Length: 250
Image: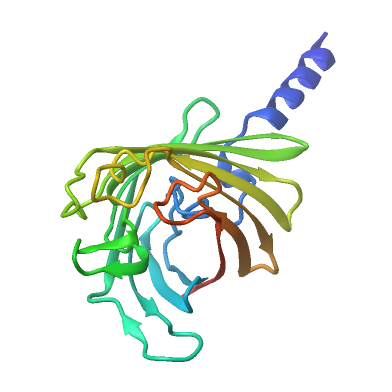
């Protein structure tokens, strides 16, 4: 009987375990949607996003403690290719505080602020093509049964609202770790803060998906398809971009 109970306990442990036990470095985002992930004390992460129109966005985040990180970012359009580079009008800032660690029963929860959007900067609307998250709350829970399943979700309030749309937004997504080196992810953003007459969205929300390749202990690369439901006005195809990440201890 004791051996049987021990076997049942081992089986349950493979299905529901804290994320820290299976993730060497928690991702800070899926595609665009933030997760509850943070950097450990003394860790830093450099991220480079290459997007359409020769766009390039770089960011640097540093873990000030096991539950707190800060970061800065900057980029522009037409950085790669020919022609005049159109730099963004100001750098972005990122701050995140984890208020609850993941346990077998509860998800991890983080609160944060991110002022960096990307894509074209629309001067007449004082916003990015893809709005910054602004203030956000995100939760993440992981399960393992041969593969690692992550369930993520949250809400955010962007400060980019000169287009007349200042609604709260909601997002959710999943990550599926098929191996130690390969992960699939998908997310759906309701787009409530980007569906008015002067906004960029048609009201269908934004569906994004991609894959993440962990190329080494400190390097990962994302291949991403953005707006698969063609929600963006005037665009009838999905966007594509690549994200490179490098993290290390100070």
